[in-house]
Image 1: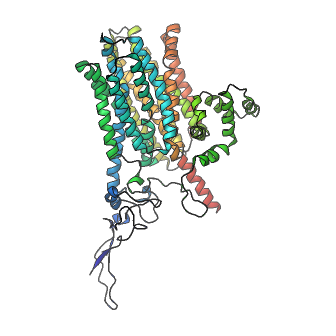
Image 2: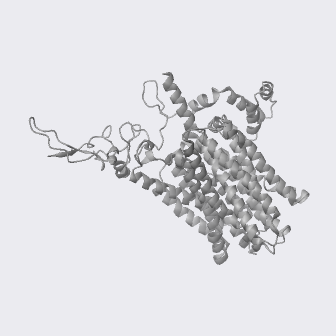
Image 3: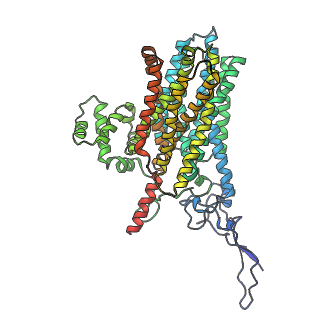
Length: 594
């Protein structure tokens, strides 16, 4: 009996790039047609479950690159399958490639933290070097420049990067920030130090939005919280390795090597990201992990990518709320009277009024670029995103307030002997954050899976954030009450503060990614990150004034008030649904109507 491969056929049309016919490894073998009158033999082959995995998924008429044909032949989607979630199990090669991509973004973002924190652990050696005109004031100037540049960078790169390959942007940004660390090491004047460090801040913002886009493309909603929490380890990993690498290199070989070492590591990691990380499953011949809404043109063919004019008209100009925001801010940034805002107040549309006041504080450069303004106003229409951004502001007030002032509190109030001993007592913050962020993601996934489709996915994650925020408040009060003589208990309390603090810090970004359509994930992360670092900036001078004028009791009161504000902002979102849920409900309703 002759056998031939059922999958030996062109993939839609012969590819102009590969020009070959491929047979899937999992293809079902079937007998060749028998001559007339010949008895058919008993079947000897059984159809396995793996047989449903056919040849490469080509997407919307796209060819798989020649270098990816092996992956494409091993994976793909069965006829009519629009996403990998519809298969009984993920193909083995897909799992392998997804793991490589995930490890790549974790290590890549860890290296962003290396090149970001290098100055922190190199600065003491720089101050001690008599050949440099550097003192505490100059170091403070550089560290104040960075968060401002970084917050604005995260916002702009997230919005403008929505049309750029996240892998290319991630790798390019890492290599560029590594190069700036090296350039910093070759400099000797304050002007160049500030210039390189401000540029470093401007480039650091590309990291998180790119990682968010890649992660949401490779992981479905049912597992995304777990992997988002695992990716968040990069913050702690980079924060843990920075003093070891930069601090040790600066101490042993001179302050320059405190900058050179992270720069070298960042460059190597950027090149590895280019080699191993891919934007999405579609980039290697697989269908998406979740079905996506396919936009059709009038003739039934797949619609082309929306033009910038189309985005501006459909997402913004057709919504009079957004037009109102644009006109309000246009007048605000040109120092003109605000009649339109008065009209909104008269109409008692408080949602739009609040957004108008909020966006009045956006950088003026935003209103000079139509694409940027379009992206901002598109996701500002979703008040949940704005609420999350304001929550992020208060979470970062607490985070920066803890990391910047706990050592001083221990020295001035608890009577700890020196800065080294105080630093040891707060060293548990990052370690606690590692465990807390992992558990937060896992808990939110468990709530979603146990709900069996009931309630909103984002709301389940918000419930975890609220619980964690209450935990932060409890641990802050405990830390203030721990006696100075119980150093081990202070360390344990700081560990628990980190445990509860890094959960919301991680989960708010995930909620923001799930509230918007896939094309706007990077933009939402940039927007949230920009507002978060406004909060971080407000944990500096404002808290220092509070401590100076009103004492440390007022400092803890301010942090507790920030926790309370975060809970109030999150409370209306406990049943919020994700973009995918809302889209599926709309499609189901349209199907019933039809």
